[in-house]
Length: 327
Ligand code: IPM
Ligand code: MN
Image (cartoon, rainbow, N blue to C red; front, side, top):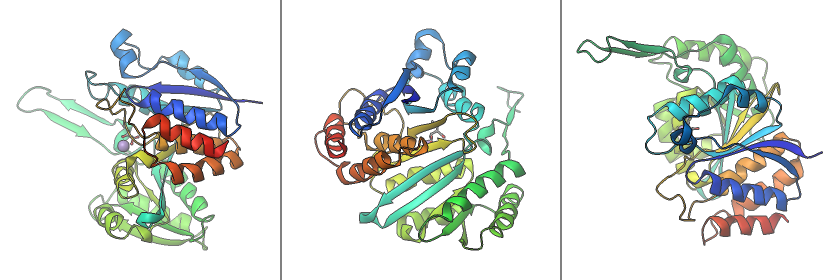
């Protein structure tokens, strides 16, 4: 039976890269039963809609969600990010954000596991005396033992399956002595269940140096939400560019659909010009197929995307080249 997938092209280059992803999936012989959702910054500017509750309820019955990018100039910061993307991650309990970086040319072959429902993203905090000279703004970092443990355990389970079986915790335990301590203790406790996995720890600032200077030291990395956000943009930059950076927002317990999206944004500056690289969206599509059990198609698409993602000629040319290779 065809997999039922919600399609959220979104804004800017989002719909352009998702169209190529769908083309490649079809060429690989996988049938999807798609439902389109017109959501994002443009829709918000049009009629004020961000993410209605009934749409969210509808999504619970999908097998997966395939998302391009959301964000449009003119929308105040946070409206779409918090109201759509983060609401989706939190409500569907997509607690793992898995971001692979593979570039033999750059010596990179690593997977970043980013906690996706807590930390500074949780929305804890607020204003006091807003707009006055005595204004106070706080933005706390929420770290639950349950949330950290399920993320760390997922990372160990993944690391146990790789060739190197190596897992690095990235945090800032020397300064964030409360949240960092919880992460480190939880990591150490779970590590005892995985004696076959070799472990390491890096402070996040040092990890930025290693990402640039010696990325080959990494296999699997686990880190919190904000560190993971920043590190994965850097990961893209050091492994062939953000145009190759794919991601899976996973609900590993499969109590609902998982969501697949490129790491990059809507790039309004190049929208409509046909130059956006669809490779990140195409690899994200392959991650979706893997999650749906379509392992063979996922393998073929991933291999072709790595090989042909730098094809000249623009968005459609790259999509066509990869589609032809997997057909
Ligand atoms: C990402 C993005 C999002 C994030 C934004 C758009 C809310 O940067 O997926 O990395 O910060 O998680
Ligand atoms: Mn980001």
